[in-house]
Length: 431
Ligand code: AFD
Ligand code: MN
Ligand code: MN
Image: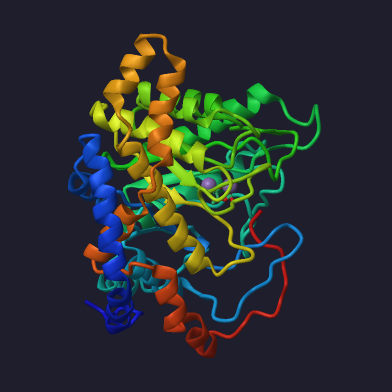
């Protein structure tokens, strides 16, 4: 095992100061839960199994379409991104996998990348293709679309890129590709909705043919942006239709920020689970659109309700139920490492809360047409402070009881600022 970025002694030293308090909080919670016939140890073991992938693009400072304010010590290449992901995992212990984005994550020595990744105790999750941006040296522009462009040559270029992503993914041990396209229109009348969807299906079928048997194809829908009037895969309906057309290996990925405000996302999740088409999630939070804020920072109840659907399915052992979980956020005003640690912890917390819902009581109240008690049963789980369980999973796995405190004490970013110079440009980032 490669030397991990944060000194183990520092984690132990900081944990020593907090373990007494954590044990007391854990015991108090254990006692409360036992009154509801819930064994805290069983819940803690279950929580420890919940993992969420880190996107390689998440460890850099994000940006809006107005500007990006890069920080000193930002990772400049895949190896440095890997190191930052290792910090997140070392302290938080909830995110041992990472999701690369091509061609952003290039390397001329994939063996070295793999060796370093494994030495840091990490592995690769789903790969992501990028046909929403032109790359230097590319023959054709994606300005007017990629997989759905009118010109077959542009579509072929986009298809070839996706196939290339699968090939790269095979080298690094991925088992899925996520396809999000920016194709759409800005003007009523600009695009023939039916024709563009036909072209999409045609292109995706070619990509699908190249999927290895044990791979999956994740379709990510998004209601708008950068296309502002219509997008080709605007919602879960189009995503579902495409997944059905393509076959069993194609599923629908839900990015929490990709819906109209006030959409009942947990219902979409329930439907996709019922019909075996839920691929997984890109977790983040939002108030207005694809805001890419930290998971659970604005609408924690919604996050809980989504996990409630997932746990319902997990408990039923829903056939083929193995969703992929990832954080997809843009950190514009915080240190990305801190935000990603906090977000991974937040999704674990929601998962834990959903695990302690008294499902038998809930079902009985539903059947008895008692909305008040059904609601109270559900919200009792949301109101429970299960942070001690989440902190205990970190501690027992060798992580930090208070990971942000240890991260700050480690001076990791300041030390990196000495070897990773600050980018001067203030170009716009991912929107
Ligand atoms: C864009 C999209 C989407 C996608 C990401 C990476 O909004 O969330 O997952 O790019 O491809 O931000
Ligand atoms: Mn996303
Ligand atoms: Mn997005």
